[in-house]
Each structure stands twice: as structure tokens, then as C-alpha cells.
Image (cartoon, rainbow, N blue to C red):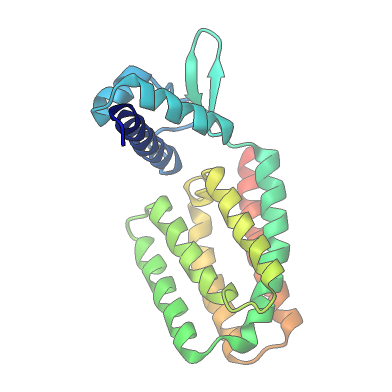
Length: 222
């Protein structure tokens, strides 16, 4: 590899590191909507030059996480309420279906794993951390839908969760009171699956659970 190629690879590596670091701070809420991204300061914090940071910011702009404003520069984008609404509505449908199809295939080991995650979520309520709670929430639901035998539905569920991540949707940051209800609804879902409830009942409960989080969020924006 030539010296020029080595330098190019190093620059790409730093750009990726900068991208990962800045995106993590946005997703975790350290950089909140409207936060001004000063490239020189970020570069200094990361120990890089401005060039890889600028490339990282451009990638984040393409993903919709960052926007450029005249006379301001790069700032963190706000959450698009319409996009969030559509994503949650779609996810409630496909995840409800995936959970119902998975239910007959969920064994006692998986139930125990889901219940253990839900207990971690319950403990998380004492010193509430919305980012950790959201991560645990995804872990819980993945246990319930990961056995879905329909790969197309499962792909749609994964796409929905990925879209929520790109929206930085730790909804519980905005509606922390919803977290307590969510844990209780999780246990109710597990009991339905354990009891061998029919698919329609499980699907309705899963959809209602997702819709309740959306309704709680929308109530804060009206």
C-alpha cells in the first residue's frame, strides 16, 4: 500500500470514528435538538483535525440527524413529529403481527429471558435513565418477535426499530410516566403468551401497547 493510500485509509477511519461518536451523542441526547455543532470543538474533543469531523457531519446531514442553517452552521435536527407518527403506527401493526406469529414458538426459556429484561426495566424506574430504558425495551420486544416465522414481516419490524433509532426516539424522555405503564403491559403480554391466548388477542394487546406510547407522546405535543 502506498503512503497516499495509507493516509486515505487513516482519514476514512477517523471520519468513521467521528461519525460514530457524534451520532452516539445525538442518539443519547447529549446533543439535543437545536444544539450547534462546532466542528473545531468536536475535533478538539476527539483529537482529530476538522476534516474527518466535517465528513462525519455531512453523513449525519444525509441521514436527517443534522441540518445546516444560514448564519448558524450545523445544528442537531429536531424530531419530525409526522415521521414519528407514521413510524409508530406502522410498527404497531407489523410488530403486533410478528408477536402474534411468534407466540406459539416462544418457549419457557425465552419467557424467562423477557421477564428478566422487564425486571431490569422495573429497576431502571428508580433512577430513570430514558436511553437505557429504551435499549432494554427493544431487548424485551425482540424476544417476543424474533421467532416470527415470516421473514418479510420480521424485516419490516427491524426497519421500524431502525427508523426509530434514526429519529433518536427515546420517547420515554418526553413521557417518563409512560415507562411505569409499559413495564406493567409487558408482564400482561407475557402472561397472555404463557396462557396460550389466541393470536388475535395477543396481536391486539401488542398493538395497543405500542399505540399507547404513541398516544402519550402525541399528548405532549398538542
